[in-house]
Image 1 (tube, rainbow, N blue to C red):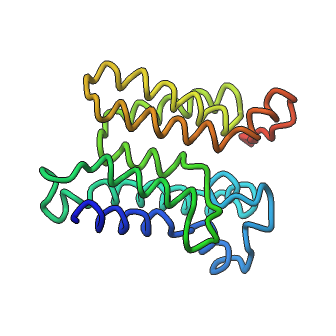
Image 2: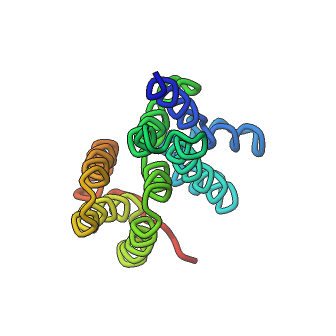
Length: 195
């Protein structure tokens, strides 16, 4: 029963559409009607700018972290796997009940979940993401490469549960980026501008 309740709570936390909230409250813009139509941080950066993009990205990361830490925070961490609960936050981010089940691409919330489970892994992912982003200028490519590196890194941590969840998250990330993969191949994927 505890699993069910916490899974539902985690899903609802993950469903909070920060991109939509920041866009409507701060800019009177429905971000779903602009750019890629995605509710995540990348589209927020492109449509609303750096400040809004940073707020949404940070919020999406933290909801994954908070959901993952829920079992520990309420004292049932020994009975309930934080990783399983965290996955439900990611599902909520992808298919949010508060935004007609059309959400983000799972990258920030997945990263936040891994931050709650393994800060070391999160740190390595962050470094990898920015290195690939700096070289390629593709946020989507950086996200996918980082998820693969996360799997490789997790193998060396000898944590089967973490490895399994990381593989699942990577599948989510690649699935949500299928259109981006096609655009990268066709050289039509937007690149970020550093200046």
